[in-house]
Image 1: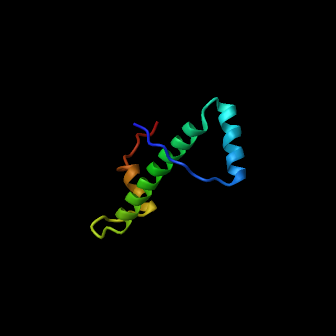
Image 2: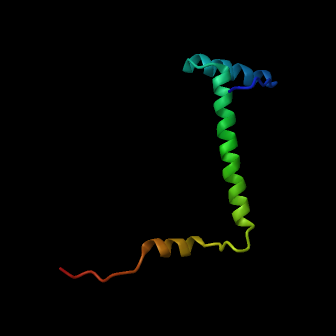
Image 3: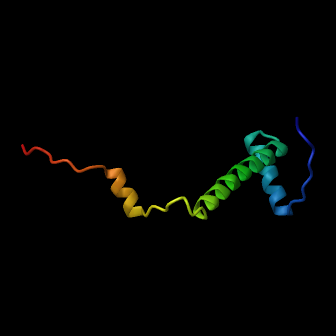
Length: 80
């Protein structure tokens, strides 16, 4: 179910939205809905990252430690 919602945009943004809607053959409403959905998803990811950053029980791994763990154990290669 959709709920009507109105928003005021600066004239420049409204013109850009109109141009994008025409170029993509989508409605302005559709484009704004997708933009809001994307923003909310990104914001949720941001909040989760901040929560993990500030969680004292969640250890922080340095880039060097991460590379080392991804490389795995070194094995000797047979010489040809």
